[in-house]
Amino acid sequence: MTLVFFLFLTHLGLGLLAMLPFVPERAGRSYFKFCSASAAFTMSAGLGLLLRRYGLAGGVDAPAGGSYRGLLVAAAAALLGAVVYNRAWHFSWRAIRPVLLAVSLAAGIATVVLSASPEQPLLSVLADLTSILLLGAATSAMVLGHWYLVVLDLPITALRRLTVLLAAALVLRAAIVGLALVGPVHAGFAEAQAVAQGMWSPDGVFVWMRLLFGLAGPVSLLWFIWKTVEIRSTQSATGILYVQLFLVLAGELLAKYLRVAAGFPL
Image (cartoon, rainbow, N blue to C red; front, side, top):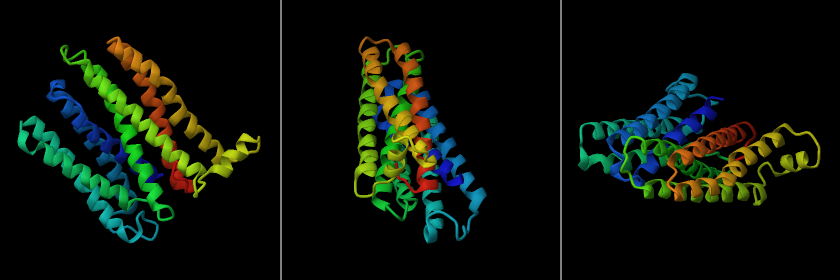
């Protein structure tokens, strides 16, 4: 379970950072500090769990095999970039903020590549990148909804933009999951089919839970979110985004479990 939570927490933090360029500075310094601090917290928790389980040297059962130390360096660089980026907002170091964010995200991509499943590396990387986008869009949109109570003149276009990004992230995530299920890999397809036919399959049950909680549920809420944003009812939109975020978090956590425990890059 250590690798499951490392992947989940690291992807959540990277997703929060990846959404920051799409939020206008009118959201205020507190928004960017909060999101970057949250990203640094989740990434440090994930890295701490990895170090506690495998240490600095790793071992035969360590993730990434011979590249374990490279994985640690990449994850630590992403975390350090997030921390210094947060401080750049605090001390108004405007000029270096984009560079720090770019460095942190580049190190995050390296972390994704190094932690990819050796059996299906390309599909694993694509699944991780779309997971980062979805986690980031869902979390950032929910947090931004609260900021309309803090920054009263914040334009509605900010939340509308994140809603569009959330919809796009869901489409991309669903496409990769569909490719994993019915493409050449067929990851988890047989187990899910067995459950659909009334037969028992523990992995198949988790595949269906991942599809229903992580994809079908969030997609069903998109129309309601968009309509509440269109009528500028930010409090109602934020309430729906809470439910959306819960479903996305549950779905992505299940996806990480299926990847580690059963080898399904969903």
